[in-house]
Image (tube, rainbow, N blue to C red; front, side, top):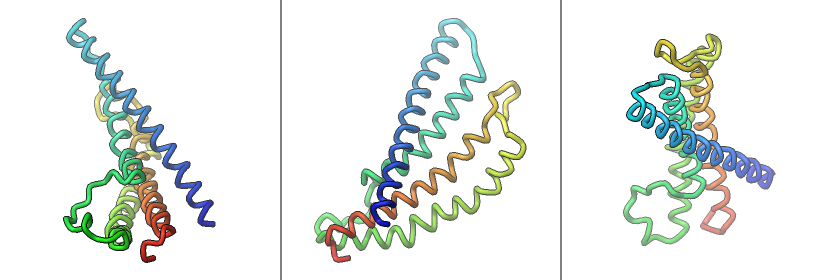
Length: 166
């Protein structure tokens, strides 16, 4: 069962990574096109700006679980580098139980009604003449929160299997 969970978390990590790479590529391309059109040809396109905004939102949201999987998050505690590996493991367990799961669980719980409403009205950009599909972008937040919880659990379980005092 543990191996199935690790396989599932690895799959979610690959999906999140590809979403980040795709969003970063789209964002870069859209900003380049917007700048060239605006300053080179004196034209502005609201839909292109919406695509850039949507790509940025997706990039930020899905970069959190990607960063967590690679342990790229910042540790605020100053003593962890001098402490034994067992200390870091238990610090991660405490952080997961008391911070990561409650905060991202709250995001899931609080955002769910907003996302359902957005889907029910097929919400589009707030700008007149803007791009549709904002409801798809609003779906990224609860998905990213759920992925972050899964990646946090996988990280702690993986470390626990390495004999860190667990």
